[in-house]
Image (cartoon, rainbow, N blue to C red; front, side, top):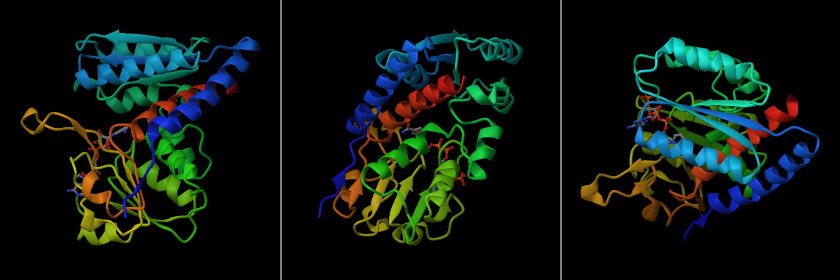
Length: 285
Ligand code: NDP
């Protein structure tokens, strides 16, 4: 059996068409959704990510402003910029690209973004809202994974066992919470989990957010399971230098029922959910 591919590019295009139509309706009422993207430093991957986010805004007709700050920017300077964006009525969403340089306290910066403009869903208020089942802004990557599940008809996950490998604040934990709210029975695994393979084999839905290339092997997957690969890992030049996920795609493809590719899977859905959150923020404003 070969897995059915969940194509993130195709689904993202469909959702973005809908967002573009809603943006144009909002513009007709005099509001252009606006996103501010803040990048501190020269991290190569971050530069690509922010460029893609700004380009995606333009494509759906949103206004976006990019603030590129040098690596030596002080925490106070960054907080001052966020304060001015919080008060800027043309900006509905603020995204601070992570990671930040070591001398800046990430937590302090994320908490400085006004919760109603926190389109990344990283502010403690938004994280708490998700926890109590009243989500406002949900972290974009897990939100995108849920869209992918909905697209294959998996809306109510009652009776399904979901296993999330990874417990980061931006992916693993919110992913687990969303699956729980969709009525799945959820297991969260991490580096301290005993017999990870056995845990994974229980999964009807397996989400890999580990950050290790091809970490999930075929013998860790229940036949027919839905496998969502969040990982984005660049292989060393000696191994071809290409991007791969956390799932050993070719092998797992022979076992899983559904599988997301990397690239072209969760990545495009993440940016789409950022657009969606910005649209929601503009609508609320
Ligand atoms: P983190 O490094 O913050 O978290 C990784 C998690 O994996 C941790 O909880 C860690 O456990 C767990 N882990 C690491 N090694 C093992 C192991 N051997 N066995 C079990 N668990 C393990 O990563 P992120 O959550 O930020 O990202 C995960 C991946 O997703 C990365 O490849 C990242 O690039 C990608 N990503 C992709 C996005 C997209 O748009 N597609 C967006 C965001 C991230 P512990 O907590 O115990 O250390």
